[in-house]
Length: 163
Image (cartoon, rainbow, N blue to C red; front, side, top):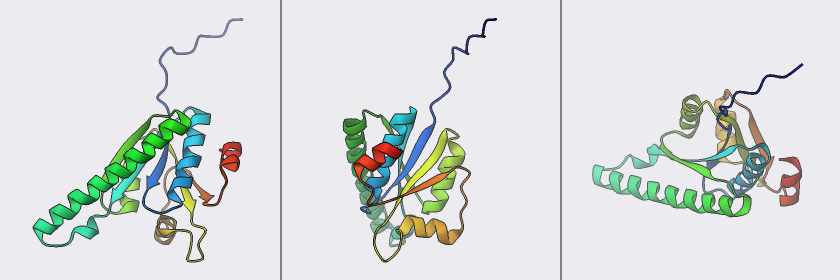
């Protein structure tokens, strides 16, 4: 008996999403998500959300602050994407949004059905797990996809073995 050949059309790659911010644990989340994407043949999406609440000033100041924040976000994303290309030979998608973090994450997941996983890293500080994890926990937000939270002190060799 012969098996049917698989559809020659390739299914689009699934994606891992990492929320990029200025916290130190963010880089650990990127390391895990990149390794997991490499191991599972996925695309890595780097999302940076510029908080629109920061821009509640006079119009001229508002526009300057928005422009500066967006430029900083693009620079940070570009640097991380370059590091991921070097370390994991992965291409990344870069997304910059403006708004409330949880809302923008939910919107992106709703818009891009190929996003299959969110990766976050918990802070090792006594103050708590980190602002994004606290925000998600406090809001009781349930995303429609799994969220992996890794410890920020996870060593590279541990990431390679479990991702």
